[in-house]
Every structure is written in C-alpha cells, then in structure tokens.
Image (cartoon, rainbow, N blue to C red; front, side):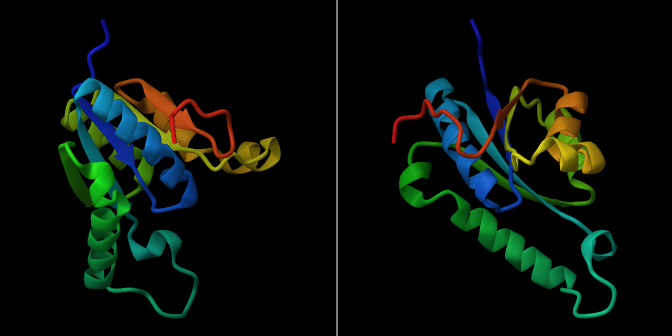
Amino acid sequence: MISLKNILLPTDLSEPSRHATKYAIEFARQFDATLHLLYVIEEPPFYAPLGGYFPTHEEWEAFADSGLQEWIVEDDAAGLTIIREKVYGHPVPKIVEYAADHEIDMIVIGTHGRSAIPHLLLGSKAENIIRHSPCPVFTVRPKQHEFVMP
C-alpha cells in the first residue's frame, strides 16, 4: 500500500503551479498528508536585468509571504495541515534539498509545457527535479486530461 505523509508543492506562483495545486490538495486529502508549500526566492543576480530596479530582500520576503498565504484559499485549506516555507537560492537544488530534509514522499509540480526546441536549448526545471529528487515526482502539464473532480 502506498502511504504519503508529506507532499511537497513547489510554486513559483505561476499558472502551471496553480494547476498543480489542485492535484497536490487532492493527494493531501486522500492520504491525510501534510502539504508543504515551498517558494524559492532567487537572489537578484540570478534573474535581474542589467540596470533598473532591484527589489530588496524585504520586498521579496513580503511578496513570498503574501503569495504563500494567499495561494491556497481558506475553503481549499480546510482540514489540511499546510506548511508554508520560503528559501533563498536556485530552485532545483533547493527543492531537491527541501524534499530530502523534510522526508517528502512525493513532489507535485506544474510544468510550463514548452515545445521540444526550447526544452532542448533551455532544459527544464521540472526535468531536473525529476532527475535529482529523492522521491517520486508527479508533474502536471497545463491543459491536459484531468482526473480531479471540479
């Protein structure tokens, strides 16, 4: 029998992550598992354009805290144990590290569903998480067949 006690939902607060959230919530309900909601704050040198305004650490922290609190609405969160965490660093190693450190049984992650050419050139965060994860990874592509009841 499969037993899931801890489910990790890494989110970048994007639409694909929103889609994956439905699945993570349903898995957490079905298995009475703790849902870990994780947001990785990338340091400004990793993503900021040259010049222009760079948000402060406090602004990123406030954005992450707000996003994590609002990500799963109260009705959907009812009856669930949800741990909301934010960490700094590169998303892939931080997600894999979090999964190992918190005895995560399954990661549920949304994918952007890009075509083959950009995938070959840029790689995929989801693919790298799958390659290095210490546990199974359930990927949710946008606009695919759904088995979660609305």
